[in-house]
Length: 184
Length: 76
Image 1 (cartoon, rainbow over the protein chains, first blue to last red):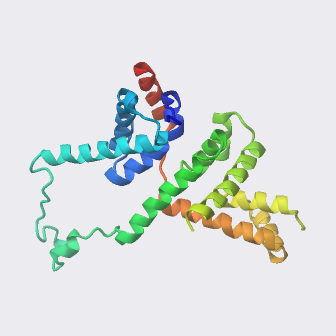
Image 2: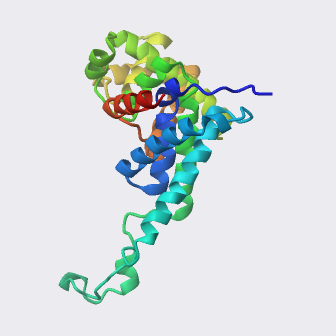
Image 3: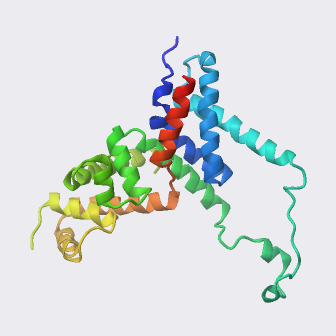
């Protein structure tokens, strides 16, 4: 019972941002995350005949991406020695008297739970965004994620400002509803 | 001074992107004093903004996506 079919020609528009967010929370590097998404699409194409249609397209692509993330960490770990952390104790004079543990601690790190929760929140939001009509989703992302000015978005998409704000309003209303169901 | 709910929600949306004028925000504030529906919308709207900030969302640029599409099409 193959209910789902693959449509690789729509992959980039539909899933690239979702996969990118998933990847970036796991590798913390935009370039690497981008490459992993690209590789995921290639791998998806190559093994499209193995797709049985029992999972949604995106779920299937995510499962490939997960493998790619694991492969990525295998690869960098196999370069022995590079994973080693070298620290000189009190190499900076102004850090004198500080304990090694304090030097290791990342001053910007929030507590682990928060980071986890925000990752999940990010994916929940992306999930809701992907349910929006494509143009609404694009306008919302350009304004909210890229922080583009209204003028630039209007020029790029050839719409007028009142058009833009109507789309933003609809997108935000839909997102509030969607997050209400799926997050709170 | 009085604005409609439609105007109020529009100002509220713009203020999420810091694109509402001082005077507009003032009018919105007055409106929110007596309009419960808009007050609820305004609260939800600000929550959405802070959630998006907190989640640290990312997206690929248009160029990156176009490049990806071209590369993918070659293999189709």
